[in-house]
Image (cartoon, rainbow, N blue to C red; front, side, top):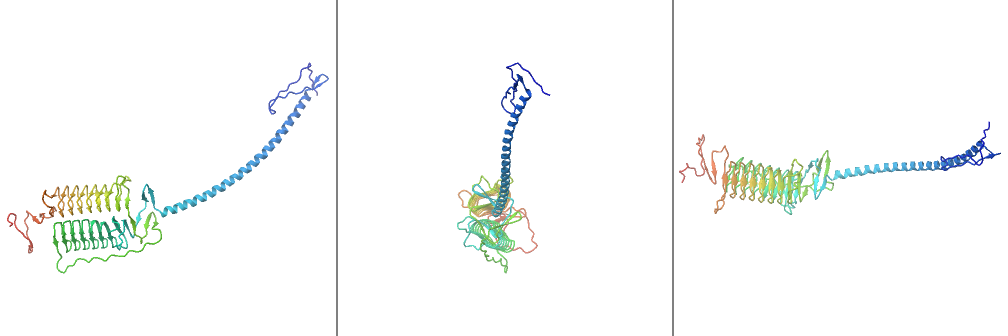
Length: 466
């Protein structure tokens, strides 16, 4: 069936189109005998439309090919990236492994100018440790020795197993012996100790010389607490200060002979530490020398540390409180200060060792201000004179040369103005029936003796002595 539309000339058929062609299309009129054929007009438009579609299709095919090429290229790039990622992963593992090995070889980290040890590791030095300088003339003990030695070259000598020397020119030649401060002291017996002072000797096994000058504890378990040129022999005897006091052993009884010093091994070429669990174990044949010093625990930022110092500082706030500011000084305990050359505070709280070679062994708020002075404990005690010692008590003051206070409350040995210092001793032991000062002892008690009494020195009733 054919439809024809008759129009009056010059009218024409308009077909607007702005869709796929992107422009307006005006169909040409097809006239036959004055008639416009609509079907023919649409056929012409269809042909033009198909031509445009063909052009677009060919362009699209080209774009599809280009897209396929880009996809392939992207796939290649992805494969290359995956390969590179795998290579980077292997390199990272290798670096981490190398870093771990490096960290295992060096258990220290640098903080400013300081080296801080691994905080969870326990450092084990089987051979020993020197803080300061090595003494070339010393044959150091073969195992577990410690020396804080501020001289250059070193002057201390811990020559036996487990021996310890602090101070200057001190020697510990007995097994497990120790000299914990002072100058030119000797601990020669096994487990013997000298706790400061000058030129003191602890020769007997388990003997102790606690400060003073030129005192000699010769017998087993003997002790001398300060004074000058005292000699204590026998077994378990004690001299409590004074001048040239003597307790001599019975006939036939001999003090123990000192041991000969040991020999140290040579240093190995291998690294000085090995990891055992969480601990670092030092080379058992090596002697470790720390010329600047060693802090075990935490550093006190407010302290001007001296050279060749040792501090054991375990403050709970991760900040140290002790301060060994003196040359060759030592501090243990909490909030303690050793400011004198070769001084030491070996425990307690808020103690001060300010004199040359002075020592405080513990207690609270004690001070050892005099040269070679010693405070062994108690609270608020002050050993101010040269070679003085206070064993304990509260608020005691000792200022005479080579004098000792053995305890009590607010005892004083003071040098009178214009008078030379004299040695003396104050005894306040509750079990002692005597009260002694200088070389005179008095008592108000009565005594009954079941055996014969032998008096070697002057003995008289009070107020009747000539």
